Length: 153
Image (cartoon, rainbow, N blue to C red; front, top):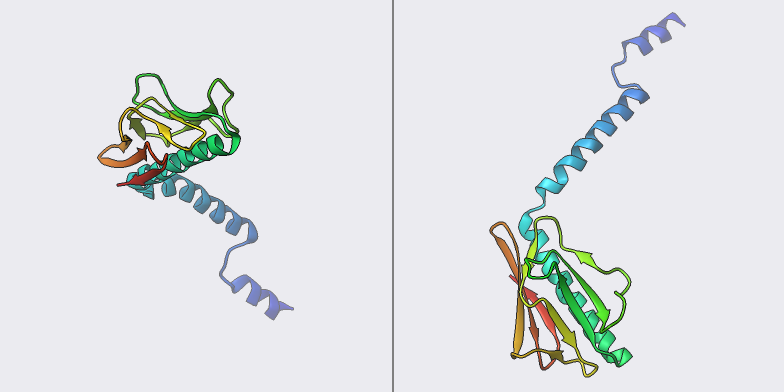
């Protein structure tokens, strides 16, 4: 037995408790560092794509339900930090209102209405929202005739 004891005492390594403590420390460091590693531009681009998709959803709801739907931005007067999708004179759809990511703001028309035909009720051929965070930006353009929205840099 003395030889076995000498071998065990001479081994280098971590105990289970030490290993768990190291893993917890690494997890905390990763949780703090990872959000700072994601470029602001990625958040702006993702917010633009999500806004365009939500406008497409509002259009689809208007067509499928035969009701006018609106996408309305808040706070009134802008710059906007959140938006909602709802039937005209109705309650917000499930999952709305949505906040833009921290530090991202939008500017453009404060509301757009989608008709049951799928068209966007605009006074111009198209409307545009600009999303910004620092020096990064994205654009969401909505065409009146088709009611289709598209995000771009």
